[in-house]
Each structure stands twice: as structure tokens, then as C-alpha cells.
Image (cartoon, rainbow, N blue to C red; front, side, top):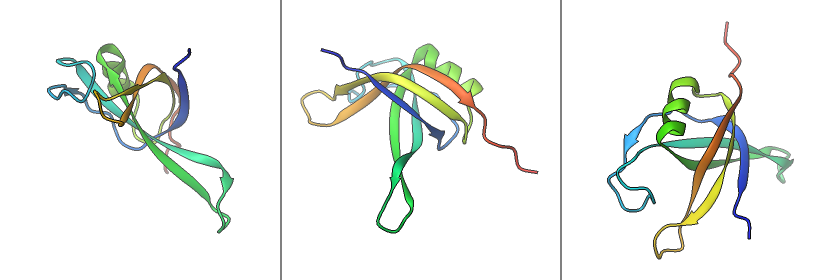
Length: 109
């Protein structure tokens, strides 16, 4: 079996580091960051517009520290990770195992 996902999208906000105190995230007592990606769909809806999906991923420890330092809102990043279930609920989390910086947001004049 293979549990792997790859996402490419723009960061919706600057990354901040938090200390995990809740049990809903698998790795208790670790630093983490939530990476929110805006990912446009590859097809147009009935109005002729491309819809965008907003997906949250969790990054822990060194990965979280690196992305908070080097990546900013609007940057395009690639996230490779896995999907896991939260305890006994049917809710799923996306856990980032590798984050790759792809390009910066275009600078405004």
C-alpha cells in the first residue's frame, strides 16, 4: 500500500509556528505550522471560471521552521506528504513530509 500525496499551490498566508497541545494532531508536544495552499482546478466551472481549492497541511519541527523562515504569502510551494486519520473520527489530516519552494509571488511596483 502507498499513502502519498503531492500538492502544488500558492501559500494563502505567512507561516507561523505553534506548539502542539491538542491531541487531534498526531505528534503531541512538537512545534508545527499549518500550510494553507490555494490550488486552482484544471477545468472551468459552468460559468467559465476556474475554481480554487484551499487545502491545509501540517508540517512539524524542522520542516515547519524552514518554511516559516523562507516562504511567504503568495509563494508557490510543492508539498509531498501523507494522509492520516484523526484518532477514531472520520476526519483526515494531510501531514507534510517534504516542502519544496518553487517560486516567489511577483513583486508589485
